[in-house]
Length: 88
Image (cartoon, rainbow, N blue to C red; front, side):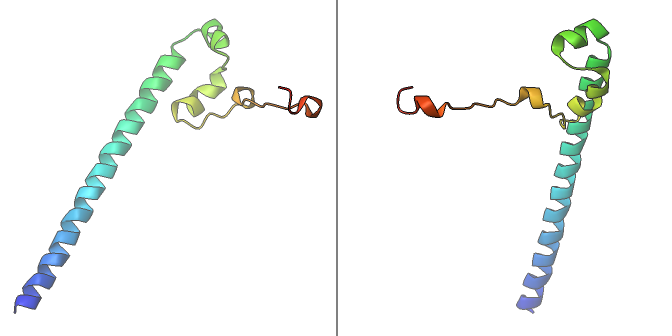
C-alpha cells in the first residue's frame, strides 16, 4: 500500500513540476514578445534619417526587434601580418 501511495505521489509531483515549468516558459515567452513589440515600435517611430545615423534600414527593424539581426559590418576581423610576427 505504501509503495502505491509513493508511486502516485511521484506521478503527481512530476505533473505539478511540469505544469510549473510550462507556466514559467509561457511567462518568459510573453516577456520576450513584449520586448520585441516595444523595440519594434520604438525603432519604427524613428525617422529615416535617425535610422541611417544608427546604420540600419527599415527592413532591418523586425530582425533587430526579434534578436536575429546579423550584420557582417559588425563583426571584427583581425588579420595578422606574418612579417611582423614576434615583433608586435
